[in-house]
Amino acid sequence: MYKNILVPIAADHEPSTAGVLNVARALATEGAKITALTVVETIPGYVEAHLPADRMAQTKREIEAGLKQDFAGAQDVTVKVVEGHPARSILDYADSEGVDCIVMASHRPGISDYFLGSTASRVVRRAQCAVHVLR
Amino acid sequence: MYTNILVPVSFEGERDTVAAIEAAKAMAGDGATITLLHVIEQIPAYALTQASPGYLEQARRAVEAGLDKLAKDLPNVRTVVIEGHAARAVLEYANERAVDCIIIASHRPGLQDYFLGSTASHVVRHARCSVHVLR
Image (cartoon, rainbow over all chains, first blue to last red):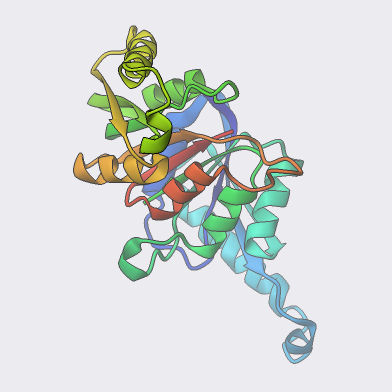
C-alpha cells in the first residue's frame, strides 16, 4: 500500500534487520522503493579538528559498506548513508524524497520496554507520512 | 506477519479507517484476527442525568452498526465496543488480548496540531507491541 518506504537503521544496529524488512515488504506495493538509511551523527568541529583529516569520510564509507553487507541478500533495498542529527535527518530525507511510510524499530526501549527511543519518538511525532514502530 | 491486529476506530470525519483496514490486511499473516475497536468515552453522571433515557444504549447500537458495516467484507474480524478513556482502553485491550500490532490513524501535523493526536501519541509511546501510525 506504500510506494516509497524508508527504513532507518541505527549505525550501532542489532545484527538482525529482518524484522523491519519484513514489515516494509508487507506494506510495499509492487515496484515500491525501499531505502535503508543510516545517519552518521555529526561530530562537533572542536573534536573533528583533532581527528585525521579524512576520518569522517572513512567512517561513512565503512558504515556504508557494513550496511550494504547487511542487505546483500535484499535486492529490493537501496542503501543510503547521510551525515547529521538522527531524527532530523530521517525527517528531512523523508520529506525531500517523498517517502510515504517510515518503518523503524523502537530502538533501545529501556525501562521495561515501556518508552520509545528518542529518535523513534521524534520521528513518529513530526513525520508527515505514516510511521510503523516495531517492538 | 502479525497474528492479532487491533484497529481502533473513532468515527471522526478526518480519520481514514479505510486505509487502516487496508494496512491491517497487508500486515495480517495467515489466519490472523483483526479487531475493530471503538471506545465510548465515559460521560460524567451529572451530564448523563440530563440526557434522555436510553441515550447511551442508542449511541452504543449506532456504533456497533457502524463497526459491523466496516467489518462486512473482512475475514476473521471481530468488532468490540468498550467504555473508558480512549488511549488507556486501547492499551489495556491490547495487553489483555496479546495484540501484536495496533494500527491507529492520526492527523497530519499542521501548524496548530504540530504534534500527534493525543490518543495516538499515548498509544505509540506506551504500547508493548508494534504500532502503525497512519497520516
